[in-house]
Image 1 (cartoon, protein in one colour):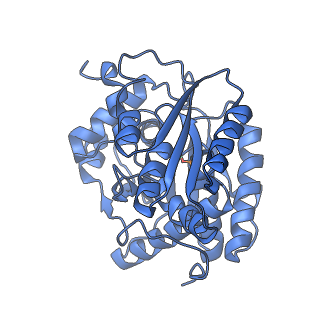
Image 2 (cartoon, helix red, strand yellow):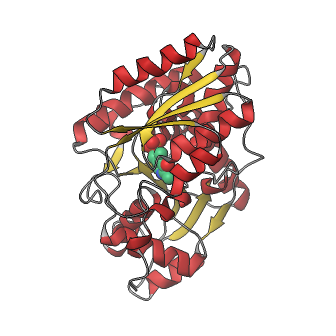
Length: 340
Ligand SMILES: *Cc1c(COP(=O)(O)O)cnc(C)c1O
């Protein structure tokens, strides 16, 4: 079994592997609508354990490790107002004794009453991050420079984490996650055919592809787009990031044919849940007791369910849904629920 070099800077934030669980309740519910259904597992990266959990914590183990190796004192990152990435960065920085600065851009045209008050934003403030909320038309570069200038003026050393933690350093966390999933599937004696997950800033997808290449594994990575308007930019950017990650961990190059991205489930755009998103969240909550989120994992699950109902998978397949977290986001969208 290949591994990722222990020489890469790393700051531990997660205790041991997250669970890989079978979803029989969901499968049985789907079997009331179709004759047969693949076996369904869920990889619980919502349980990474840091301040509400989620996929960014795996990336932050490498990013904060790098920041500490570079003697940083302050971490600067950006995202949407309900960014799970920003919340996990605030928590990781707190644990590492660093000051987080979150630049949150009001880019999602969602007008619910809680969106600009509750959910991740509330947690960012509790976690002690310095939060700046900027208009969607703000000059992002100028805002960044202003914050970097403030940090330098206070004799701090800034470390910038890209949006979503998605560079080759952060994506290394998902290469490691791929190896973890494969090892867990092997020990359960199951042969996985595909891993299905939500993709946005592409670090999770790129890391999984790099890990798959390192392991020379046949599992397909099926990425459900929740953010990109066009297919070309997603494929090009994923190839670039996946190959940079592969290079960093000593894996073979990734090819365009390895990228499977499904564009049918975005709806009106990033941060805007579809009807399918809401019903997928309710179905999984009511059959598995698992909470998905309105922006990413609920939309990806809605995609997975519609693919299963359309017979896109073989009945002898075993699918792993990667639960990337985001549950605090539910509290930003209360007006979407309670209708059924
Ligand atoms: C950020 C995020 C994703 C997408 O991961 P990327 O690496 O940005 O593509 C999926 N689910 C949740 C809950 C997230 O917060």
